[in-house]
Image 1 (cartoon, rainbow, N blue to C red):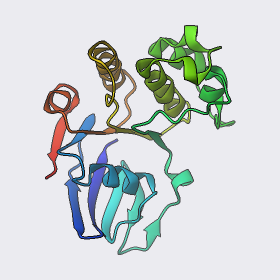
Image 2 (cartoon, one colour):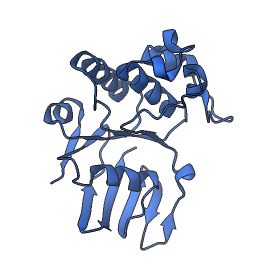
Image 3 (cartoon, rainbow, N blue to C red):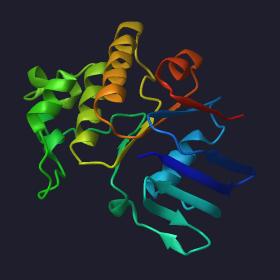
Image 4 (cartoon, one colour):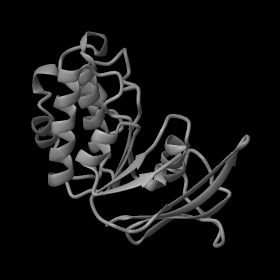
Length: 203
């Protein structure tokens, strides 16, 4: 399963024009801040409507302007990890992970917790987590939504060198182990080259 994206969208004075050919693995949107990379993620997630084009993931059409198809966000099965971890401050880590867990999905919750190394964090409050720990919990919550694909917006932003390397290693394990198509945004060339199976340049 892979992304097939061809979208155009005008935001203010900016014109976003993005074409992503089908291909498995991690697709990296690379370029400077403000070039429209996050807007493309939002279009794929259904949070921003393109003016024209199409968005397909595998055999599923999420958006097709010509055919009048525009699935709502909740029907797209996107696992979205935002720049900010966006954990619920009033819920402990365990409750954050399980929030919105699909009732019908046969998910390996313990397997995801083990993959991310977050078992020691389950009883802690979000405010007590380091940046790297919070990012791992946010990725876990996205995986436990039973997604068809992952959207990662600057997943290494605001992390120090040690935490950055930790999350880079985690993302490599996800890339190699979970079999989901991943669309990742970064403005760091080394991240793009290390994680991407293909790189789409912006700006």
